[in-house]
Amino acid sequence: MKFLASIGAASLGLFGAIGRVVIFAVQTLGHMIRPPFYLRELALSLLNIGWLSLPVVGLTAFFTGGALALQIYAGGARFNAEAVVPQIVAIGMVRELGPVLVGLMIAARVTSSIAAEIATMKVTEQIDALVTLSTHPMKYLTVPRVLAATLVVPLLVAIGDIIGIFGGYGVATGTLEFNSAAYIRNTVDFLEFRDVVSSLVKGGVFGFIAALMGCYYGMNSGRGAQGVGRATKGSVEAAAVLILAANFVLTGVFFSL
Amino acid sequence: MITLSNVKKSFGNNHVLRGVDLDVARGSSMVIIGGSGTGKSITIKSVLGLIPPDSGTITVDGTDVTKADRDAFLARFGMLFQGAALFDSLPVWQNVAFRLLRGSLKKPKAQAREIAIEKLRRVGLTPDVADRLPAELSGGMQKRVGLARAIAADPEIIFFDEPTTGLDPIMAGVINDLIREIVVEMGATAVTITHDMTSVRAIADNVAMLHNGIIQWTGPVADIDTATDPYLSQFIHGRAEGPIEAVR
Image (cartoon, rainbow over all chains, first blue to last red; front, side, top):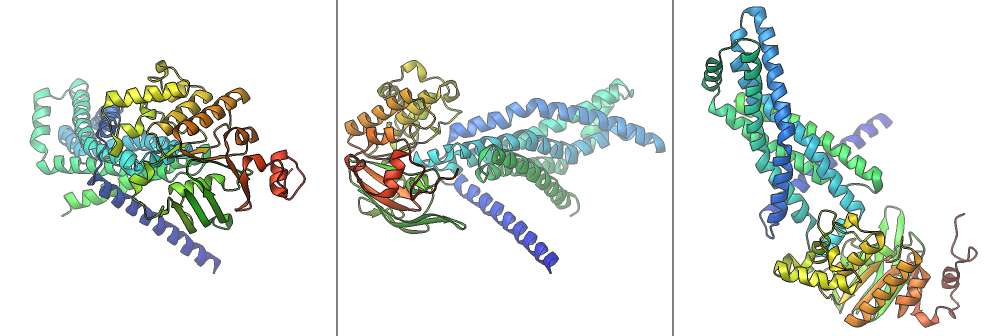
């Protein structure tokens, strides 16, 4: 009986948490379309989430593209299919690895930073101070971050895709003796419009999830340093899991229908 | 006038406010005293709507705070938080002028900066502080900046949450004097919560003692030394023995 009760309690807890996140997301979207709009905060968030994430996104994509080329070449050699390196690197980066790795890097870099910042603001009463200064915390803190991430992560994904493909290109032409012009032609010819669209849509969804989780956990953080630590850890875990789950769903939507 | 009638607030089984009744006259300085964890902060946060009470009514000039237009209502208030609660990412002058840079009280940037510098000067800070970040300031300076922010938009009502906590006695004295001067000069209604008796004597017109979730005693500051209320007497004399249980 106790076992059943614990399953029931856990289920209620899980559904309660999902419900709270959904309500938070709906409230965020509601505030996004109602003034006032804090454009300076939006610009700062675009800079923080987009521009300052470029190095980590670029390096991640470059090394992943390079490793992917090596793996495909080595794997393809087992059945004389070494020549497919450009096509598989392109499709692998654009459809899956680009958006997912960029999403996860954003979860690590941006979600954690948003959660820690907002949670610290909460425990030091800065959120209360915002309210007393007639400023809605969701409009001032959540909306700019979520909107910026939703807008800028697709761009980061596009850049990551390109750098990843060039990582593969560098390895293939530098060490695997692929012809440079043929590699680029094969890549361009093989990619479809749908591949690129799916990559960008995934980027937008992952950006939304990453920033939303950072804000949600930050706003709901517990007291003290431990509360901030828990909020940060929880936000990254939730963002990473939701990004991977959303990737599965979106891949199904784009490529199984 | 601020009136709290039978205000109750619980967190689970922890009944923090059990029926607070309090009147703060317009233009007066009320200081709420009481031990740590007695609900002093919850009381003023209830007035501001930061923590909604479970029951009871709170009115400001006869208007129920839950029914007032939120922006117009909050525009009447200024608040100095215990840890100053300055926004780390903004320079000092933008903290002070926060309300003047956005919302219904928005002013041109240059004018807002001018007002911020004037308010900083009013709390004893030089204009060179204006472009520093809060993290570059000492605790006393942060409190002054918080005070400047609280008075930036010339509010009618100012709340001070533990204004001297964490400060050395001299800086605490400076902040107490500043609060008193500013409140008198602006003619504002002030509500201060503290357990620092020096602050009480420096700031208060009236005192309310909060204990066990209710106001145990209230009256003019001149009466606190002669009052016979055992809770008040124990608190102001800092005695371990008495009706207030002291955990050793």
